[in-house]
Image (tube, rainbow, N blue to C red; front, top):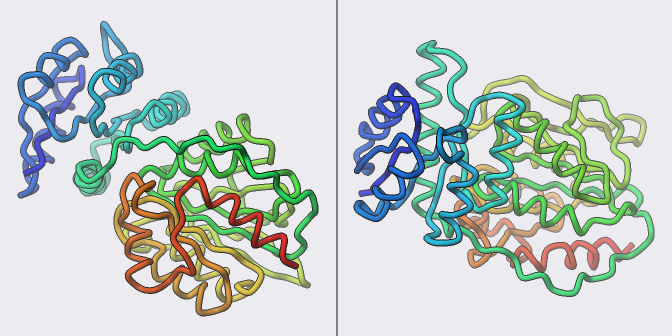
Length: 340
């Protein structure tokens, strides 16, 4: 059984989260807390496997509590956030502090929204229970990247649980001369825009949330919006972002498989596919398709993954040319892309 402590200042939210989690046969809500001070005592008393933590709380906000928790007693934390720009910015900061995953509160009480929230909540708590909470990459002396442009090359990245920090670690090493990078990270709307904005302020290259129709250019990374699939469209020898508003694939939208499949069909031989940390199997079949179509494919190794679900599934399928520690992926990309 996965023992969960629910921390939220709203009695209604504590009740809702507890009720939803208790319906899963493998999850037990061992307690609740309405503020950080109650939470601290409950953690000592109940020793939960996972905690859900509200971003906004009285007395001590969620970030301050998380910072103390990760310093004194690291454990898997799923942040529960409002679906707003402010909520997204704070939640992404929480991920940097060591939270494993996050979920946005439902916008309203429509049955469809609550059902989807219920599914994602259980999925994320299960993923968090498997997580290494967190392995920060060792900061080696950076490999000096080649200072030339790579014409007609492409990097495609897919990720889920733990992916926001893994992606940031990779993109911080990318030079302005790098090929276009397309990214499918499992993330809700609003959060994807904040994620792109946060990355853009921390990296040398330009990072944007794809709107559809952008011509792919070197030194730019395009992040799939949280409610659309990201694909590519090639016209007259030029590649463009294309967004698709179709059903979720593997229960995800954006889906990594959709991104990888689209590249496999039109530009595989000049692409490198990278599948990072995440729960589930999304992206594993797409990575195999990329590999068979001629792309070089990389899966993050188990030791450096927060959850080795997606890359592990790809390895099981024989979908990757090699498994690499997160800190070794950027140097490998530089090595591959220097070979023209």
